[in-house]
Each structure stands twice: as structure tokens, then as C-alpha cells.
Image (cartoon, rainbow, N blue to C red; front, side):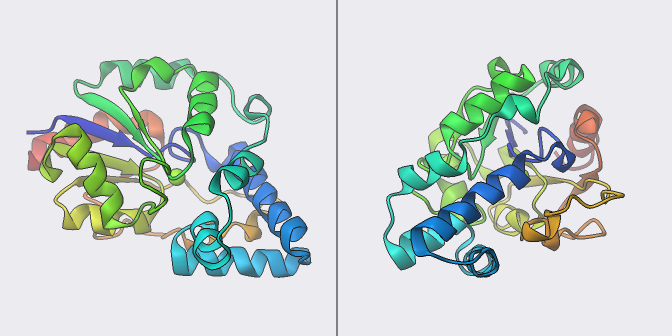
Length: 234
Ligand SMILES: [Mg+2]
């Protein structure tokens, strides 16, 4: 029996074309350039390596350079979300109709999540935000991140459904019995000038992967997708 819907935040509740994550990624590279006197190319290469080997830039920095995570997170997320996002009443209407409890499960931090949710006009739709600090910096797709959320909700995996735009975050969720829907944004017709710099953007699947029980291409399909999945598998 489904009880909880877990929503990823960034590029799930708003599209990549907003440019917000490009701006955050750029801030992360600037941090690397400034702190370690790197060229933009070196900073990008380091960011990609950290993303592949440790899941996030921050995790790589913590493990290999012992940095203060708060300093990094504050720096990276110091962007004006209002410049990139608009209130989204249709999304709010969709969320209001979902007959399950809703939480946010994000690799960003709570202050960033609160700013994004407030700007979209949907902050009151979520019972709780589980963030990178709650995960003790072992982010999605680490199995421990999902196990922490399950414990906090006192829920079994099959009582939860994760809605994500990052395919690699689904594998461990499925191992724990968590249901999965992948949001596959249609490829952008014209790439933003620095889109190539986002390692996550380079790893988007073109077909619905086996670890997703269902795929959709627009967050406004979320209600129909949940209903379909619920009727098929729950
Ligand atoms: Mg995401």
C-alpha cells in the first residue's frame, strides 16, 4: 500500500531549461577555481571526477580535501532563484490532488530547497525536506540515504514512490523495494552555452531504463503517472 511520494527537487519540480542548476554548477566551479587556483577546465574536470567517483562535488571535496560543507553549500546555492523560476499554479494543483503524503528527498540543502519551493508556490505541499545534511553527506544514490528516509518515515520501501530526474538514483531505491518514476525531460533543442559542463546533464538516458517502473516527460503528468503505477503494482 502506497503511503509516501518522495519528490526529488532540482530539475524534477522545475525543468532544466530554467537554467537554475547551470547557475549552481557554475558557482561550484567558481568555488573550485578560487579555493584551489584552478583553470575553468581543471575545475570542470575535477567536478566531473567527483560526480562520478563520489556522487557529488561536495562529497569529493569532503573526502579528498576535508572542506567545511556549509561554506561550500552556501557559496554554491548563492543564486537568485527568482531569476530562474516562476510560481507554478498548475503544479500546485497537481500536488494538491495527490492522495498520499509528500516529502522532498534532495541532494541539495534545506535553505536552497525552501527557496525553490517558496518561489514555485508549493512549499506547503510537503510534509518534510530530507536534505544532504540529513543524509550526513552520503547522498543519493547511496543506499544509506534512502534507508535514513525510510527509518524517519517509519515506512517500508514498497510504501514509498520516488520521483526523480536522475536515472542513476533509481537503482538503489529499487533494491530497497521503493517504487520509481523517472522524469525524462525532452532534449533541449538548443543547448545552453555551458550545458556541456553539467556532468548530470551528460548522463541522461534516452530510453526509459529498467529501474524506472514508469517514465514521464512532464512533471504535470505526475498525478496520472502515480495513478497508473498504483493500479499496476500496488
Ligand atoms: Mg534532480
